[in-house]
Image (tube, rainbow, N blue to C red; front, side, top):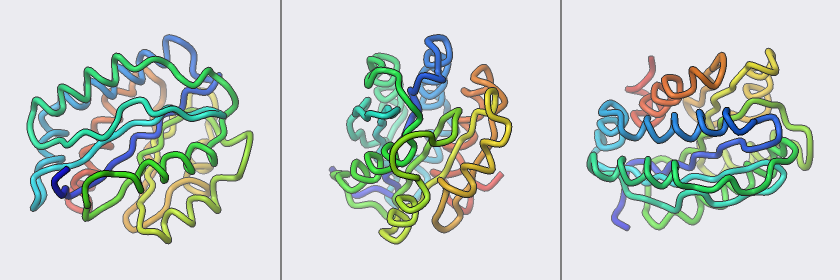
Length: 205
């Protein structure tokens, strides 16, 4: 794969707190985001005119949902949208093992087949870590290795989830967490988040 401006892993919570309808709204929202002209413009707006994107589903297990795709044109975004919407819900719903999800996401980021100027993990979920290794130390290792970790916290079940993400999940230069009230708002929130992280400092809104 040719060099890109950004390598981005979408780390998506599929734990038991995410029911069937919420999973459909989340994955559908992500798919819709990659059909959004603003997201494609952000992905292709850097010096190399491209981003590399992959997706991982996590609970207390992890599964590759979408392998690495190079996004350099509108049709590339459409291919990611199709892959996301066709991805089976694996692993089976389990506990919210945020630390284990971060380990898998950072490992996937390290396997990106393109050299990238920025390395980003985009974590989205609706619950605090409740099984496995705590995410904070894993976050610190990832940041020390050059990764930026951002979060989208869906607060319909845990009102203080933004603070948990801020304390234990996000890290790196310019990292941020965004709040999403419910999965019905997910599509709009994830599109804004993708524009912001793909553009970097220029995308702050």
